[in-house]
Image (cartoon, rainbow, N blue to C red; front, side, top):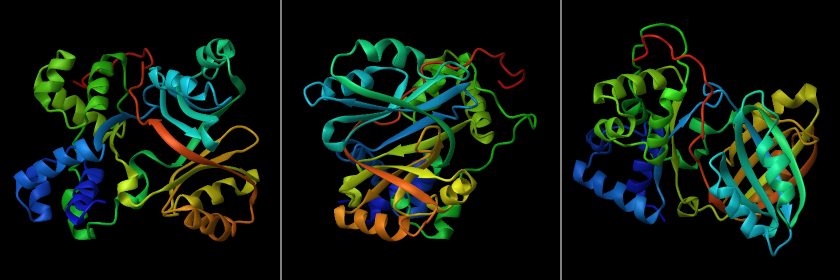
Length: 332
């Protein structure tokens, strides 16, 4: 389990994944060397990783939630094949290991997951069912992820760690283009990579990297998130919740769920179940209590399917491409 200093460091990195260790150390009241050592240990022992993620809409990408059902003999092979794809993230084994969930990124406007659904999947033996749900709107997720990371710092220390907004040359929202692909790939590998390392990966100067990164962050086109072994925060039970909600009440229910401490993701999708959530709980009893008391109190939820998550095989992954649109003048 993580101690108080570990939790404080995780909370600090959630607020600003690229905050200098000197600033984090000052806020936490410890030495820079202590913060550095803790960070390195958490990377090794707790799978802690800061990742830079592009806003998919700014990158010209659509997101599809794909559910596959496979027989027990092939489900692991199918899941690992999905992990190896460059257009997938958040690959999970669920429902005892026979159901596979993945988020698939495709160019916006393309037939959803065309290469995956219409070509690769039918040729894979052992698949018994496939469904795809277009992600329409995310109410909770990304930089507003599970609040189990966010219980260590008081409001004053949180304000001290808030990243300083960077001034942009114009009011126009920055657009992610193919020119940013190398920068995004490097930040996906390590969101805390230094400017010199990012310059080597992109072929730009460190000053150009710093300006472009600041511009993308200031415009909301790029954010930083954390990956962490949540069992070290006391989470032993996870489940995907597929809900059917009347359209007139969908927005109200989704916004209500987005305020629940137990949830890490809430998103509206297409399909017979039009709302999906990801629950993280201390154990089966806590999940049952959440489903029957908090979720059950929402009368607009007409149906609920619970798929226990057995294992997460892949978390955030680099987007394979971005839309080919002209680069915004003056952004470098």
